[in-house]
Length: 325
View 1 (cartoon, helix red, strand yellow):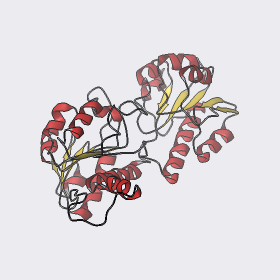
View 2 (spheres, one colour; view 1 turned 90 degrees about the vertical axis):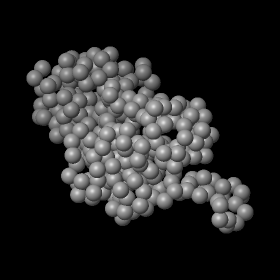
View 3 (tube, helix red, strand yellow; view 1 turned 90 degrees about the horizontal axis):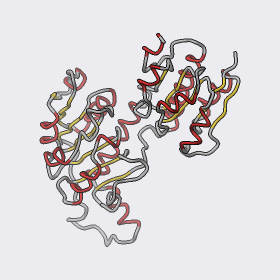
C-alpha cells in the first residue's frame, strides 16, 4: 500500500527512515526553516498524511487544502496548540502528538535555567569572556541559594512532577498547583496550593501548564507583583503563558530578581527590551534538544503517522472523536 505524505521540516533520521520505508511517497521541506504560509499550503495539498511541527500553524484552511483523502496530521511535539483540533475532528482528520518522551529532558532544562538564573551564571560568563573581571571580590554577582529555597511548581503534570522530584537533593520546600493532589510530590512534603499562594511564597516559580484560553497570560502584571522581589520565574512550557511585556517591566524595575526563559510569546521574536536585561537568561527553545530525545520524538511522530495511514488507531491520538467521522 502506498501513501503520499509531506514532512514540513527536517527531523532526525530515525523518524524519516520509518516514513520512507512505510509510505510510497515522502516529500519534505528541503530547507531547515519554518515554511512560509504559501509554501505550507502547497506542501500539504492533496496529501494522505502530514508530519508537522509545533511551528506550523495548522488551521482549517490548511486542513482543507490537504484534501478529502487526508487521514492524519502527526505533530512532532507534545503540545498541539498550533493545530485547530476541532476543525480536524469535524473533517475526520486524526491529530497525534508525542507525549511523555521529553518529560525528563525538559525537566533537566528547567533546572539548568533555575541554576543559571539564580546563580547569575550567564552574567558571570559574559563578564569574564569580555575581559571585565578584575579578580575575585566579596560583592561580585551575588545570587540566591537554590538549596533550602521554596520551589513553586505551576502545573504538576508529568514535567512539573519530574522537576519537583529533582529538588530532593537541594532540600527544597515544594508548593504546587494542580487540579488534583499529586502523590509523588506529596510524598516529598509538597503542599498543594492556589496560584496566588505559590507566587507569594516561592523563591523559584517554574511553569508547566498547557497553553489554552485559561492559561494564556496566566502570569501577568498582577501575578508578577505577587512574587517576592528575590524570586525567579522559569518558563519552559509555552511563551504565551507569560505576558512578556509585563515580565520585561518587572525585570527592568527589579520587582523580581530574575527569570530563565526557553520559550517566548511571539517566537522567535522577543518582547522589546528583553534581551538587553542582565537579569534574564534567554535560550532558544531547547527544552527537548538532546539527540536521544529528538530522535525518540521523530520515531513516535512517524509511528503515529503510519498507523493512521494504515487505518489503525495511532498510539498517541489527540482527537479520538475523529475516528467516528
